[in-house]
Length: 250
Image (cartoon, rainbow, N blue to C red; front, top):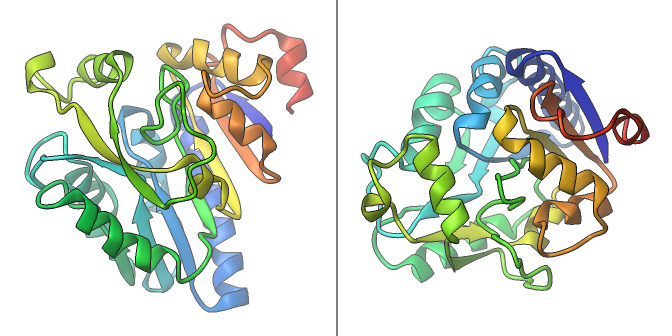
């Protein structure tokens, strides 16, 4: 795992977007097309603003996404389908995209998207880290052994509180309590992982990810096992981690 620290979230997001574009372009040159996995959330805003401006042949990109609330409509302000359509799909028009529907039978949705996902390895995954250290909606204690592509999970109280803090729901009663989430093992199958993790609310998660041994109580520690992961922090998200630790991951 490599960690890069920038002064602001915008600077980190732009640098991550540049690396992501370079990876996609290299894969397209080699394979003719590239498979991309995207995360969402308030921490990814600056990344997406920069990413959609990068020079990529988006017609050769096939997009998947990490997770979606069970029961949510695609028009709901908190829908990750809506998020990705507004901030990515409707701007760059990727050649193919596979969205997780929050409506209908979640197991049917999982089966349909998993079939597409299994056709070829994901070349690049953009994987956020939650305030409780989760990756996708794999809240602690996460199951590191599950080999499925996606599963239905119950969201922890900490995870729900993060969604409230970010303004996606008016109150806890309005928040969805389950989600379709990519599993930890399938995230680890990505050839390259870029993790954009700005803001002070992520400082404890960054500290724990970098300083603790691999543990399902901090799911993001699993990514330290991956051969090609770059984490982009700003000075606020890196503020609880000592300079020696940051240097060790530089």
